[in-house]
Amino acid sequence: MSLNKYTQKRNFNSSNEPKGEMEKTGGELIFVVQKHAASHLHYDFRLEMDGVLKSWAIPKGPSMNPADKRLAIMVEDHPYDYKDFEGVIPEGNYGAGKVIVWDRGIYTLAEDSDKNGNSFKEDLNKGHLGFILKGSKLKGEFALVKLKGKQENAWLLIKKNDDFAENDDVLLQDKSVISSRTLEDLV
Ligand code: MN
Image 1: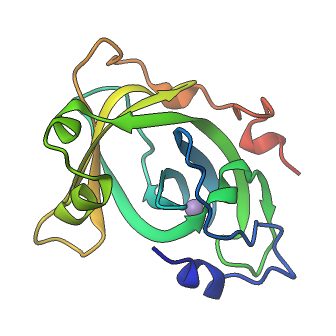
Image 2: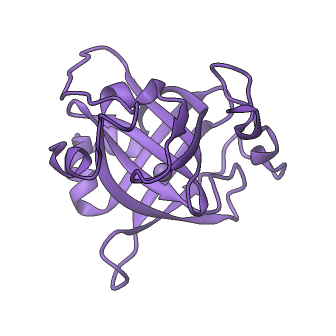
């Protein structure tokens, strides 16, 4: 786990994104989903692991419908502090555009992983992560599954069939969970 790539891509004199450091919380593990209107709109899905936020960019956003398999491109680790970042990354910067905290909460390992005594890191290396989200919008069990034989960083985010699964489009809930603002409300 390292923040080198994160730091290299950014100019902290120009962007107000957190510089951040590796941080161990020791408490419950958090997740955050940021809605990001960069050159292409996407949702950044981040899971706390070993002091950083493992991150995937999801062009179509997460879904609560198990029939949807959403492409998730793994991107560079982000600092733990990034979980609170909401605002506008100025023109000329990496990822320039508006960001809101679309959802956040805590997560736990799915029972399968727990039972086998696998660490999250092992599951990450194996390309299959199972976890349970307790967010404001995203709830219940999900899996991130690495695509084999495709591009190196391509994964799928899939909702498992449980009591929280539903057909309604969760993306219609478009407000920030920390400020109640939509992306359009940001200036
Ligand atoms: Mn992004």
